[in-house]
Image (tube, rainbow, N blue to C red; front, side, top):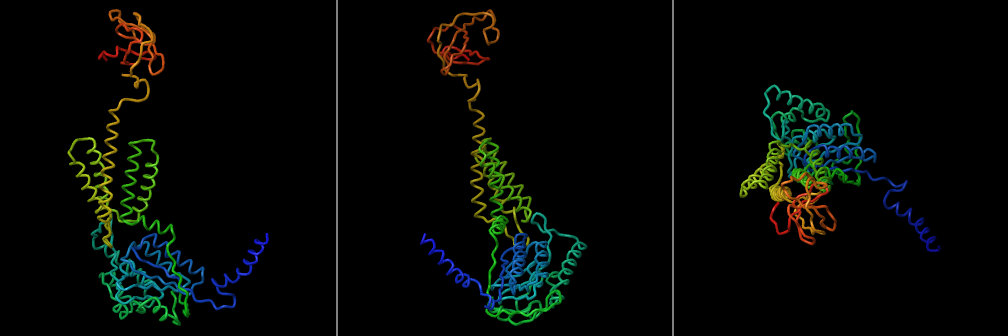
Length: 460
């Protein structure tokens, strides 16, 4: 009791002190908070959700600035537009910073860069090459001039709708869309596409401290970034998980795992686990398929490969069908995903690592299924055929119709008796006389009567 009272007193004594170490007191000046978000891959719905959520959280935390560090080859136009809408309507000023050295803000990233309150780049970076691409199944389409003009006009109008209000050089920015031009950090600064070049995040925040910004809605705000508290906001566990699924390698593995899982369940009903795992894997693969630029020719090659593996198990081809299936699956893996933006697809290591096991598992399981069709039935009365038995009495001749059996012609002598079969007594008929204690063999079962012959007989 005394120990509990002592610990409770310590909690009250040190509790306020612990809180004071993690948050400023009511009379302490609060440090300006900078929320940092990162775009480090292709722009897709999961990335857009992460950026949109980060902007909302920064507003709830009354942050002084949102810093989006970017290195992207581009991505989906719908996701880009969603992110830009949140940047333009953000109550907290947004800085987009292409960094580190060697990074790029290409394609959709260029549109996002120009939408920020402050556009900045690090030395050794570039941006631009923002011509829109239309692709189906990961394959860029050649469109007619009229449709091409409509697409370019829509993209440039969207760029002008906010870049002009941000004070950017709209005419030069449009050349990145119409002519696919790209710009270094120096060319971007001299061409008034960006506001400044900064060597690092600290250098960027130092240059922005005390600057007045004109917001998109026309209001002005002054940045106070003295000794800022930089909080890096990472993706949630759910977002990280979903972002991994839309990686080409993971999508390919999920697709093959789903197909094999359902195949195992269909060929071996009742195992349950392979069917459940396969169904989940296929659902996740379908989710990724809606985001990734899937080439359906590659998907068809993978289906052909699975068919060849099944045929290899069924027919003797001396490995020709299996080799064809492996080649088809490898080609399908390489063609499955081919982004027109980055050229990203399934890696060679993953393709080889998945194809060989998939071939072996499919062929092995199919051979088990085919062999099982030749096995003797192990349930029902058919399992008794061929089983040994012992006559418990001397078989007596009968005529007409034996009990429980078909009619026996008068010209065919028949004998009837009882046999012990697998610990049970059965009524039995035989074509010859059988003495008590003799060993017999079951040749067929009719109703509750077994037809037997002497064990040494080869008759069926």
